[in-house]
Image 1 (cartoon, rainbow, N blue to C red):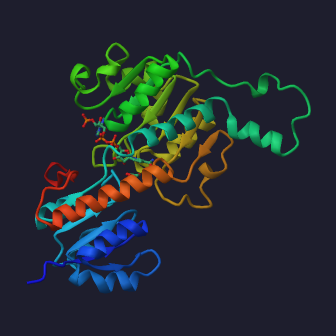
Image 2 (cartoon, protein in one colour; image 1 turned 90 degrees about the vertical axis):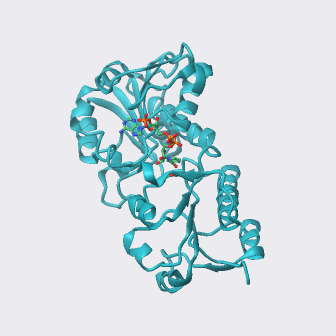
Image 3 (cartoon, rainbow, N blue to C red; image 1 turned 30 degrees about the vertical axis):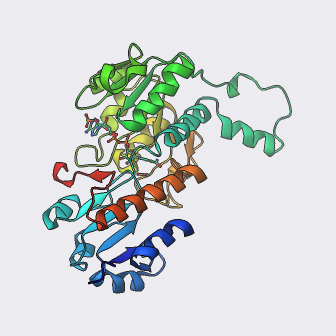
Amino acid sequence: MSTRQNILVFRELPADQLARLQAAHSVTVADPKTDRAAFDAALPLAQALIGSSFPIDAAVLERAPALKVISSVSVGVDNYALAELHRRGILLCHTPGVLDETVADTVFALLMATSRRVVELSNLVREGRWTRNIGEEFFGFDVHGKTLGLLGFGRIGQAIARRAALGFGMPVRYHTRRPVDLAVQAPALLGHAEHRTLDALLAESDFVVAMLPLSDSTRGLIDARLFSRMKPGAIFINGGRGATVDEAALLAALDSGQLRAAGLDVFAKEPLPGESPLRTHPRVTPLPHIGSATHETRYAMNRLAVDNLLAALAGQRPAAVYDTAAA
Ligand SMILES: NC(=O)C1=CN([C@@H]2O[C@H](COP(=O)(O)OP(=O)(O)OC[C@H]3O[C@@H](n4cnc5c(N)ncnc54)[C@H](OP(=O)(O)O)[C@@H]3O)[C@@H](O)[C@H]2O)C=CC1
Ligand SMILES: O=CC(=O)O
């Protein structure tokens, strides 16, 4: 009996990684964003899915009765109907770890850009408006030595904390539901990072960085109340998921002067709609969800996702399985 199984690839993979799948299995490539009909046509026979950035919801799963495994080319799993996957016994794999340092670099780029007004002042030069020495109205805000408050202190949060504490001399405060045992999980941060309640963290932090997954417990968590508890003049950065933030409350906090600036890699709706005031707000630095978008890291994510899928289809335990039961 053939062990070749039907894989539906729903986002472009590097050619060599696609070839690894094709060598062992029957592969259909169909991106639902550009060819929904081909994606829908492949679902009924698909035993495995691999891709990202498309919601695999209960309606999609209903049309994929043969599905056994999904391999996401992302660490975040908010695009998947987790309870339904658990109910159907479908394995979900993802790509933790390989992107931590790159995403932390991106978050730090936003921290530096917002505090030192990099984009705004670069545009001033490019547009021929640098006609005299820069005065106080264009001065920035120091990063080194300031207090960093991290909402979420998992793999990526800790990579951000290492940069802040060890590179920039920043005291780090973090908020999670369960404090981390630094001696065991993050020894490099012993003496540099401390757990805080949410309100205590907001009151102390000059920079508040959200690096949270999107879940029932984090959706809309960062709302008007939280912005009002931040230090006046704080900078807010979101590198996690857009829907953890009430964007209207964020805009109000910027407009009232409560927030100095915001750096955003993620938005409630992506791509960011043209009419969103966050696109052009003078004190917002928006990025198009590029946290992990380097050649090296995207390749590593694709390779891990293919490793995960091939292992699962061979009846082995993949390296990175997401526990849908805990969702
Ligand atoms: N911008 C981008 O391109 C990228 C964005 N991401 C996003 O970043 C997220 C985090 O990734 P990663 O660090 O690997 O994930 P981890 O699972 O390692 O860390 C998640 C952290 O969030 C905390 N957390 C979860 N729920 C809550 C809550 N309700 N209140 C407070 N803290 C909470 C967890 O602690 P505890 O459970 O104890 O509360 C943990 O510290 C991903 O899920 C993804 O959405 C990831 C990669 C790239
Ligand atoms: O947002 C990216 C991810 O890997 O999750």
